[in-house]
Image (cartoon, rainbow, N blue to C red; front, top):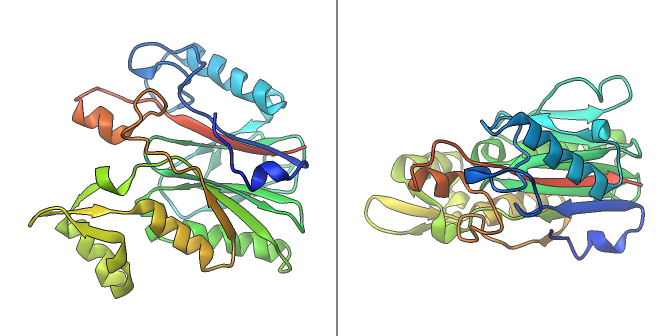
Length: 250
């Protein structure tokens, strides 16, 4: 379990970036797999989500997960929709007593707290969502609720640049969007680049004057602590687990 030093100072919220430890799943999903979209035994996933809800001090049905699709869609959770299926890659809410959750396995989990307006949020920021504006859309939606903000964010465990190898087509896609994106890439060889996803999403937050800190852990390298889509692919495993990151207003 990992925490933001900045967010830890606020007594009105609970938050946690959970590792893969302390769960009920086995095999490649060992042990705290929170991915409903994985092929893990659904009873084990539910036990894992129960464990997370207890740690967050909310009822299991008040742990709100998204159906994530690498989109740039943001949904505000209100009383009328919080028990419905949420198709989005970011959620925000003013509701107390519910925990917003995001599941990841190399992508970036970001949790947010607007301390002036008591708004919490979480973002699933893979390269695609970040490229298409999930961070901008989330901050904009928070600012629509109230434009006088003081937003804190923590960028959680994700794949580090040394392990995020991409091809030249991927690189050109970013450069064609903006020449400034060059600074997020490092040469590996003539055919491959290394991509700094953490810095890419962090800069997007800083563009909006968000106060950012990091849980700077590499999901690919730290096998005992995190699930990793890319590591599982390299090991030719059929599937992979997902870690969960959550925030709740007390």
